[in-house]
Length: 147
Image 1 (cartoon, rainbow, N blue to C red):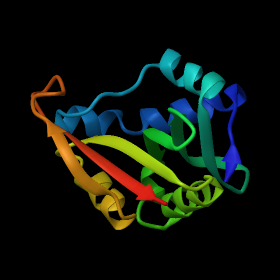
Image 2 (cartoon, helix red, strand yellow; image 1 turned 90 degrees about the vertical axis):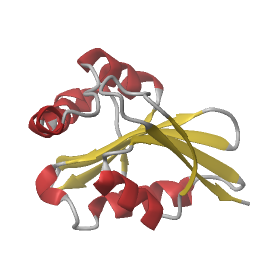
Image 3 (spheres, rainbow, N blue to C red; image 1 turned 180 degrees about the vertical axis):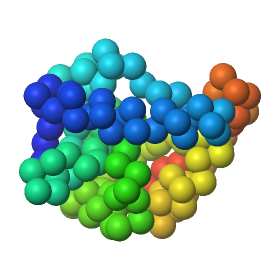
Image 4 (tube, one colour; image 1 turned 90 degrees about the horizontal axis):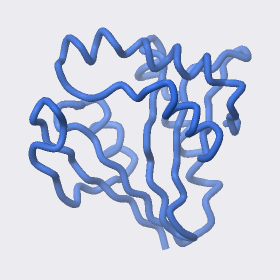
């Protein structure tokens, strides 16, 4: 796990852009703008998984207060899916959090791989926001708590 800064913007954008065909084909979700990703790298906690010095995945976390975090985004190169890298990155970050903590996130109802990942990590479905996304899809709201 490496804490990323703005010098990783190009690599983060490359990973984000790998999802453009999937988002367009599936018709759901949003691709975050270049500017939003730059601001995240400058103002939020952004962690990366590097393999042979190359960024392969990243996790953007917003610290809301002393115990509450919100996961804004997790992405990995598609060829690195299901190889345990994002679980390793997530668990490394989680171990660095001071207890107690609570983590919130939202995910599009059609993003089944992400939902499976979060549930495997122990996240519980708390609620949903119907018609939240431009395609009319619901946002599923998950949380994970540790005392």
